[in-house]
Length: 152
Image 1: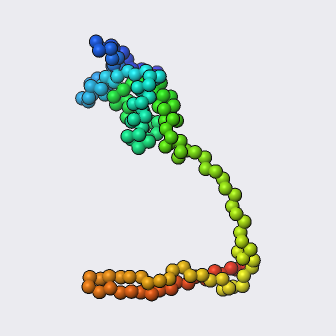
Image 2 (image 1 turned 180 degrees about the horizontal axis):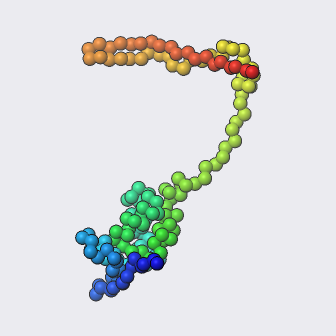
Image 3 (image 1 turned 60 degrees about the horizontal axis):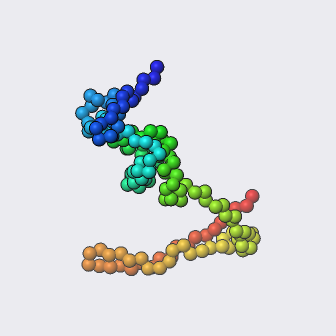
């Protein structure tokens, strides 16, 4: 049998609705024990969600929902937060589908068959400097690699 987490809604003289939860015996902040009830479709709620979303480095729905529930109880919170995050341009940019680019055809010199050790190239060349307190050394190196094709 599933028990309701929210047991009571009470109205304060200021017009703010607070929810009385089962966490009354906890020694926490008042906003945590009695979170403020907020409607899901109000523009201030949308702005607050987006502000928290940006200050928390564009976090996901579940993280943002748990952070907001420490102070507020938003009706239909998961749906409201998901709807607000969908309007974030930074998050939409990273979730965008990447265009598929066709690979260019290989040049002719990469397609023809080479004899063994016919193709070589230079990987690293030039002076490398090393300092040790008062002395400085200069090393001139050349690293050469060889491509070896083994055909069956």
